[in-house]
Image (cartoon, rainbow, N blue to C red):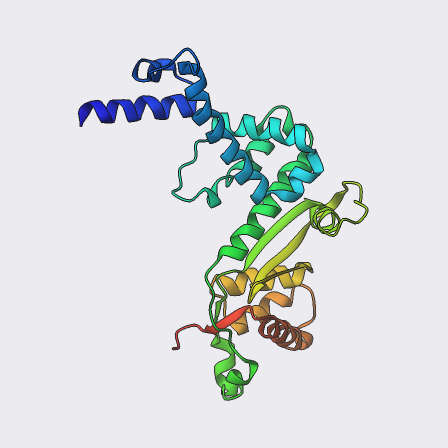
Length: 261
């Protein structure tokens, strides 16, 4: 058993680091030498991880082109081992890698595009939950509204983006003409969620982004009204909060009232 463990460890180090110690455990022939036998597995391992990255980041791969994406994948694979049982989840640190790598950090739109695509994967893979119908709030007494809080769909994600990556992603996905990368004067707020098996996304006005973030961290409906006074006068705040709540319910973002079954 100890020898098997040692062989497995040496083989793993060969796959991950190119360590040659495994060679002493492999029998080669004149027709198929040791190096060739090992390369069958070593090359296949890297190819599968590259395929996983291309699956998770299809638009980034399309934007870079086959050769440049292969170079990116090789650089990422060298510095990031696959730590999950499922290869589906390989690539979670790619956006951070692109943002920090000396070469790729010079093109910051790449990191944001990778971040966008990874969040879309998370949105699609998130658990499902039955959504709350607007009619379920019909019986809420007027005096209870101020303390009303909500529970949110597991797929909901929020992003703050400085580049027009959703527009780039959308154009390349539809095989349309790609817009040039554009840096916004201020970061734009985005909301992503899944309904059935379809991913939806839209940009958010600053007031909605602030209200949604506050509601998701436990703020009550009354506190949302107070928060919205930053953008509108007190008389209009309740109506705006009600309008946002109606939009969130219609979109299927809310799954229940906090503290109720």
